[in-house]
Image (cartoon, rainbow, N blue to C red; front, side, top):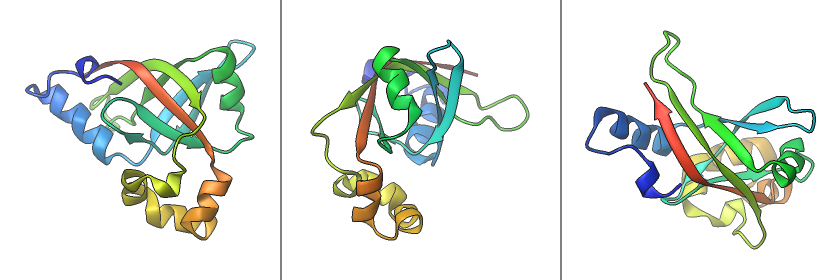
Length: 143
């Protein structure tokens, strides 16, 4: 996600988008299955200043979806009252050679204790979730 695609950080909406990209634990990633059905999944992510990075299990169906249909949507939960809506769309790419999750300081800072809970330790988490997906060319809308 290029910085220019984010809303102006001088606006209330731009500040909210920046905060949510930094602080939210889960974003809903929607890919499209072979029959055209949207397939939403909650995923862990980091915003690295230019893209959203998501790690995946090698057997995740979303990997097959992205290989054929790379356009994706992402959104955060709203506030339960129809507000605090942030919706993004972009292009997903599976990236060979990306650092493993446990080697990405920002990812470990955000998810380290959760990674340990899920997999026992950081390195095991990286073995279970080795497939990196980068989402770029993101457009943001919301209210």
